[in-house]
Length: 378
Picture 1 (tube, rainbow, N blue to C red):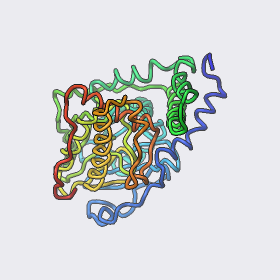
Picture 2: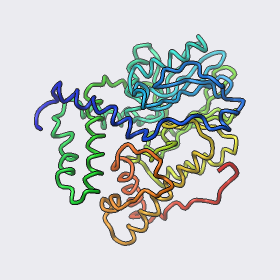
Picture 3: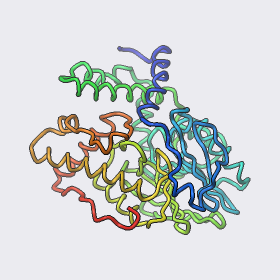
C-alpha cells in the first residue's frame, strides 16, 4: 500500500466512477415534476441534452443545467447560466473541464454576449475541478473569498502524496470494523475516498481568481435586463454562494439543496444549514430552485431536505444526551422508511459528518434547530 500512485491504481480509482455515480444518484434522475413542467417560466424542451447533462430555459434569460450522473460524470453537479443584453454569467465549474465546456457551449447556443465570469457555488471537487476550462478561455472564476484556501488545503496538498497517507485511515476502518453494519459504512467511505483521491491526483486545479468578500455580499450583477443577486449562505460548507433572480423568484442554490439524496455534510454547519433552508422556505410558493444535485424543485424539495436535517438532528440530540460518542451515534442511525428512496454518496460523508456537526453544536450549548410550522408552499 505504500508508495506513489501507480497507473494501475489510477485506473482502479477511475474505474469506480460508475459505482460512485450509482451511489450518488441511487435512483435514475426523475422527470420534471408536473407543476414545474407546466410552469410558464420553464421550457418544454432543453436547449441541448447530451445525456450526462441537459440545459433548459427556466426563466427570462435564465437557464439551468441538470446532470444525470448515471449517464456520465462530466458535469456531475447541476449548474446553469444567466444571459442579459450586455453580458452573461456561468454558474458552476463542474467536475471535469468537459462539463465546464458543456456549460459554455450551451450558453453560446443562446447568446454571444461577453461572459462576465463563472461562479463556483463552493469549493467541493464536483463544482470546481472543471475550472481549468474556464481559465483556458480567459473567463474569470468567481467564488467565496475562502474558496481558494479551502481548495488548496483539501486538494492541492493531497497531490503527490503516498496512497497509504491518503487512504490508510479509511482502509484501517474497514479492517477493524466490529460489525457488519460498521464495515458496510466503512467500505462506502473507502470507495468514495478512493474515487476522490484519484480525481485529485489527476486534476489540474484552477483556483478562483475573483474572490467574493462575504462582508460585501449580497451584491447585484446587472447583465442588462437580468439582475442577479449573489449571496453568501454558509451551511453546507463555509464557502456557499447562491445566485438569485428575485424578480423571477429563481435561485441557483448549489449544494444547499440536495434533491433526492442525503446531503453531503462532512464539513457542514448543520444548524446554520437548517437556518438557510428556513430562508429558502420564505421565498414563497412559486419559488423555483436549481439544486446542487437532483431535479429542479420548488418548496417541496426544500421541505424534504429540511425533514432529513431535522431527523438527523433529533437522532444526534437523543444520543448526545445519552452520552453516546459521535462516531457510534453515526453508525446507529437508521434510515427511516420515508427516506429509503434517497441516494447517498457515502455514509461518513453524509451521516457521519452531520452527526459530528450536531454534536459540536450541542457541546457548545446550542439547542437543536427545531423545524418551524409549515409556510405556504412547504
